[in-house]
Image (cartoon, rainbow, N blue to C red; front, side, top):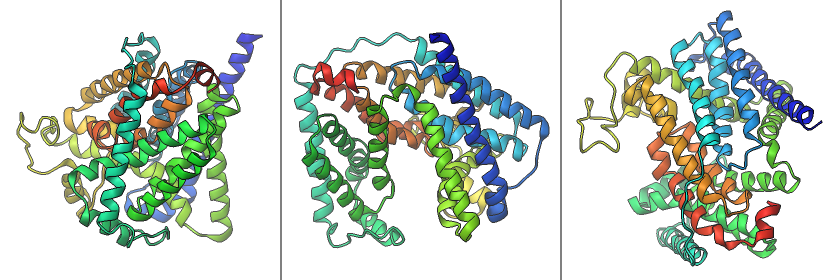
Length: 430
């Protein structure tokens, strides 16, 4: 009976994820292509690649569905990469007749991630006796610096809660910022405040829950980065899911909820013709990052690779172009001045080609093994919520930038220090 139950759950996860993939493709044909074909969202169907796309996705899902039974907080990172980036890429693969070798190498990378994370033994890392107190002091210190700087540089005067008028407030923050705060701000919004929120939820401290939500909204109002509003909703959603006992059905629930939201937005679009919400959710969140991966592949398959000369190896190797890859693509592909940032796979390819994808994925996998190791003493919900938002940057940003600027390594550090905050019963229940 147990094996039968497991098999039914695997099948449900696979089916629900395939439903979401079908909805993505339906939305592309019904909305993305008709509305944004001029931006490169074309249709050039390959029926052979349609078959390949579904076959490969099902194969990967057979493994990822099993990952739900592992007590590995890092699985949230893999699921985000899979649902937000890989699934739309698998759709564009056949809808736009995109290159086979690039798609296959990225597909293999998910199997590499799975096997390294599931088969690697935890790394033995000592806990600091006063780690929880040190964590509190560090988080409090960063909070004082960030909010103090924002208020001192006119943050209260430029407060704005109108989501349709964010750019002037954001520009005001950017013009008054410095390098230190530029690093600390995403750490504050995506790690520090979410650690406070999750800890308060686990300990059922209602006052501190409301206080944390307030300071997060305050942070948004002074900077107007929309992800700052989105982040607490993710934490609250994950907390509710885990509280209901569904932490071992995470991939299925994520696919289900995304499918429901996609269906609602498509229905609303058909009723009123308003493209704003569907454009943000379907085009910007899913298909734009996927499309950029193929754009970068096509461009950098014909020119010299960067070999990290614009990044962490800038002092060792010479940059062959004297500008960043983003500037190169914006200028030479689009002929515009903007920032078409690409995620982990495109970043790996532009640096070292196809082998770079494998190498970068192996590095990412061992960073996630480290994360799972330091997270072992903590309630499962804590590391999941701490890493979830920083890991979303892997969809749109270079991997080493995500590690540093977007706070993945900082999230691992905070998880390690915060593990001692909880009693044994708190660790078991969530």
